[in-house]
Image 1 (cartoon, rainbow, N blue to C red):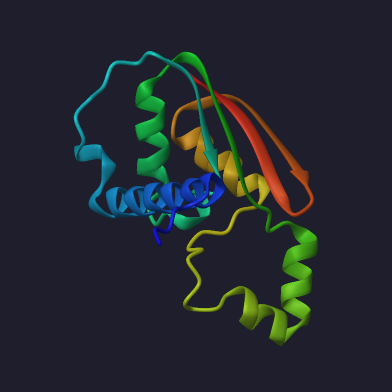
Image 2: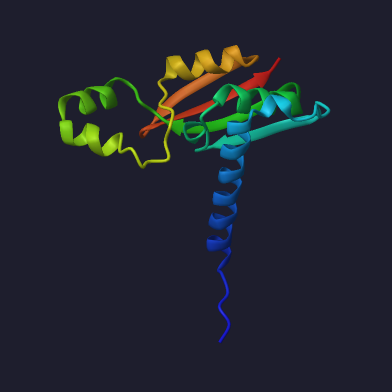
Length: 141
C-alpha cells in the first residue's frame, strides 16, 4: 500500500523546508547573494521574521527584489505591553514562552518592528496589533 501526503500536509512540509532554507541563508548572510533585478510588486513574510537570526539581512534581501513602491505584507507574534506584563508576572509563563528549544529567536513590539523595517529601507509602514500578532504592510523605497 502506498502512502500519499494530502495537499495541506504537503504545503506544511514545503513551508517548513522553505523556513529552514531562510534560516540557513540568514545564518550565512544574505548580503553575499547576487543582486537580482528589482521587479517584484509585492511579497509576503508570514510567521518567519521571528525565526531568523539576522532579520536585517532577510528584510534587505526582500527589499532588493521589490520594485520601488513594491509592498511587503507580513505577520509576526506581538510582544506588546500585555504580553510582557504576563511574562513578567508569571515565572511559569516566562519559562514556557522562552523555552530554549523553541525556534523563535526574535521577539517584536510595534516599535521594534517599525525600527527594523525603517533601517532596512522601507517606508509607508503600517503596523496593527490583532489577537497576539503584529500585521504589517510597508513599501520599498
